[in-house]
Length: 171
Image 1: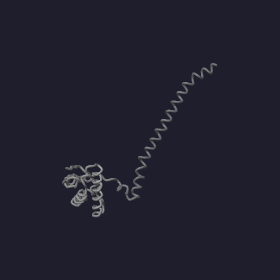
Image 2: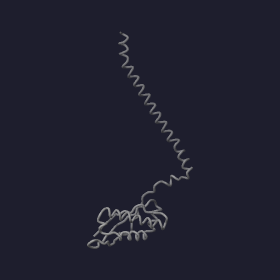
Image 3: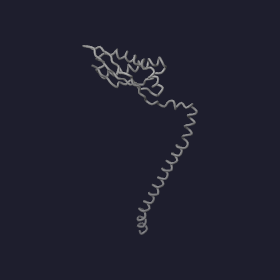
Image 4: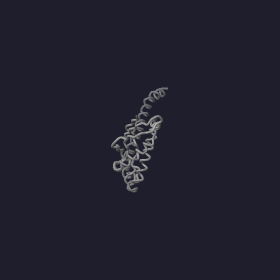
């Protein structure tokens, strides 16, 4: 019986020591694995990325998105729209969103063409259409599509990513 008492007294201390050893061993394994993974990613990943980029003629660099740039129209658009009871006067201020300096330059060079296209689209609208959010959004989309079409015909690039209304007044 004395042996049984000695074992039961030693078991709790021995169990705590075994748990501590297991936790320390597990921590060493996890930290070692993390360190090895970080070393592999930091040292071997750069060479593999460079080799794949050279093999593909650096095509992924061209796929990176260009920064957004904004080209403001020099003056607001002022035009008449027909309405059910009377004609109304509309004033719209516009900014064009383009991607990259090349598209910004093309947009600035073709501002008279863009202004004429936008004015043609705007003058086809009615006052009933412009009183609703959906009508304004349709006008914005129509002006974007038409501007892109005209610029694509001229310079073989759509140039404009978005047409933004920065001011809209209807009297």
